[in-house]
Image (cartoon, rainbow, N blue to C red; front, top):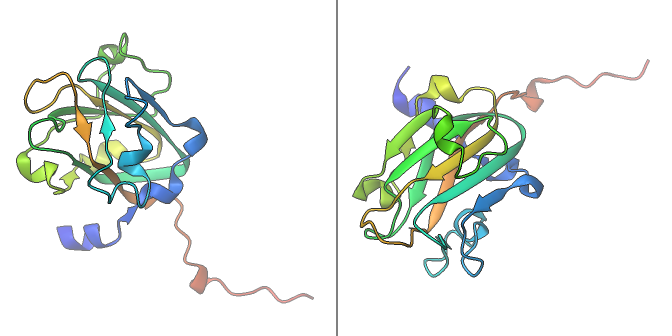
Length: 173
């Protein structure tokens, strides 16, 4: 199967995020997580997610249903955009003190192309049956104290995909 055939079926998983459970540790309260993820906000170049005390960010994203994650887009400025990012699946209650205790499902180093919006294709086999995703932004491109994220897009599919058109209506007896 060609890569384009796989990519064509992927959707933006924004609608499957369980916003009541989302956490972002070390975010600057005037530049919070929704700026980088919510529709409308993430398209606005003037809005971004910024780290607060240092360059690291720890983002926990639960989903309303099981998903398969195919790729991520993490967009940011060339200097203060994220560089090394670790992704963890189905790990709850992680903090900066214990994040290094767990092996990551994937580790990515963002290139200038990625920071401009080029998707990073993940090790797909490690991102099946995902209930939650933790994104650990370890550092940024320039080593400065503030990391800025303009946009985060999670691309994939839901695990149970039903073709509603293929179902026949059951007639009342």
